[in-house]
Structures are given as C-alpha cells and as structure tokens.
Length: 311
Image (cartoon, rainbow, N blue to C red; front, top):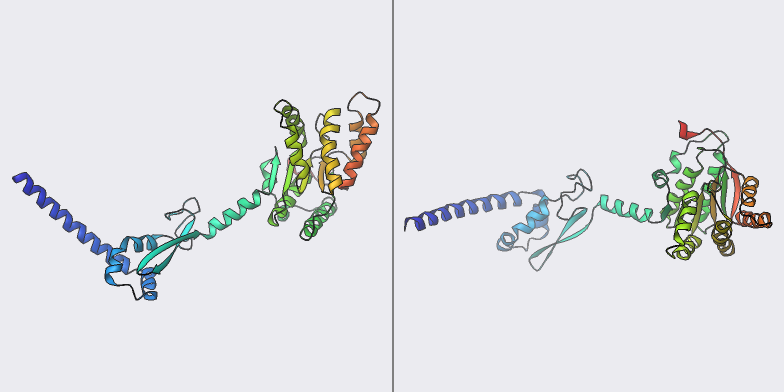
C-alpha cells in the first residue's frame, strides 16, 4: 500500500508544479505586448477560449516577425525557418498563417535570378559579377562597357539581334563584363547561357557516346542570350567547327538571336585559326562561312587594359 501512496503523493506534487508552471506561462504570455495587441483587436475572445489556446498564443509570441531575433536566414528561430506567422481569429479560434520573411523573399528572388544564368564550366566570379565592380580605364574598357550596358537597356523593351565580339589580351575583364550583363539580364527574366569553349569542345565529343549531343546543341541554340567564352583557345576540329559551332550559329543567325564572344584573337586571327582546322582544300571557305555567321550575330569591340588576374 505504501508504494501506491507514495506514487499518488508524487503525482499530486508534480501536478501542482505543472499547474503552477501553466499559470506562470499564462501570465507571461498575456503580458506580452504582441499578445495584448492581438487580444485588444479581438475582445470577443473569452477567458476560456484564451486559456484553451495558450500554446497557439505562445507559438505566435516567441517567433520573430521582422527578422530581428534571427542572426540570419540559416539561423532563423521560427517554427518554419524563413517564414513568419500572421494571427487570424475566426469564430473564437486563433489561427496562424505563415508567409515568407524579408530574408526568405530576398533569397527566393536571388535564386530565381540565378536560374536565368546557366553556365557550362564557368568560374564562380561570373555568377557574382556586377557592373558596379568593373574598374574603368580611360580608354580600355569604357567602349565595351558602354555597348554592354546599352544592350541591357535595349533588352528591357526588346532583345537586340546582335551581341558583341569582345577581343583583347588576357585578364582585361572581357568575361567579367559579360557575367555582369548576365546578372542584370536575370533581373528582367532574360536567360543567358555561358559556355567556356575549351570545356565545351570536350563535352560535345563526350556526348557522342551517350547520344545527348543533339539535345545539348538544341539547348544552346535556343537560349535567349548565348555567350561563347574564350573562343579560339580550344583545340577544335573540322567536325566541331562545322557540325556543332556552325549549326548553333546558323540557327541563331536565322532566328536573330544575339551571341556574345570573348577571345584573345580578333576576327581575322580567328578566321586564320579556323582555316587551319581539317585537311580539306575547302577549309578556308568553311572558315569564312563560320566567320560570316559570327559577324551576323555580333559586332567586334576591342578591350584593352591591365591584366587584372596578376593584381
């Protein structure tokens, strides 16, 4: 009998502590300015209804409504990270509806913008480029940046039919400027495909074996804005020049879709390189055909200046 009595006394003691804790919690919750404001808006709520929904009121009270209690989006203290509660009262019942906080909204917007910039083997800095970070020389980059910014401005009404062929020495900022353009175009939901040419050649050759080459070529054909980075640096072949690059440029020329290029070679030097690919006597003609397509989808602009990769 003694063990039962001891158990009963223990339960009564714990139950008393529980009730005391509930009363303390109730007082603390009801003293909250946020809860007082909610109850002031809904005087129809009875004491019984309030007591039955203390847990719901606590859930509403302890969470951050304006991100001030959270160090970051990753460190959000709310029940659903990145979402803030909004209290509604209907027929005596308190309901919490959740919507994105400011940080979550910004993260969603940034993710949406990033989805408009796709790349094939491009460095991270391309995805973080911005016009504000571009250092201008007196002559070296100003013309190229001016033309690039004008392209963006025109794109807000209608996508221009021609891109730019940026040529110049290593490290003068050609790729970075086009990365900045891609980020700006993303803000108006214009997609850009960035392609690093040396890796592109290797990927196309590898795609022959898994039968995905046509699918990939079609994807590059149809991007709103296409960027071929470092054209001329790849070890090309007659097959790649004519069947891959030629097919993409032909489609975009016919559909009047812009293409941007960066290269360490000007147009004449690049044509000479293309003419040395293959063993046919027609290589010069085929090279000229490729260059004509490049001229149809882009306009040449020289970029000069210091090599910022060495700084």
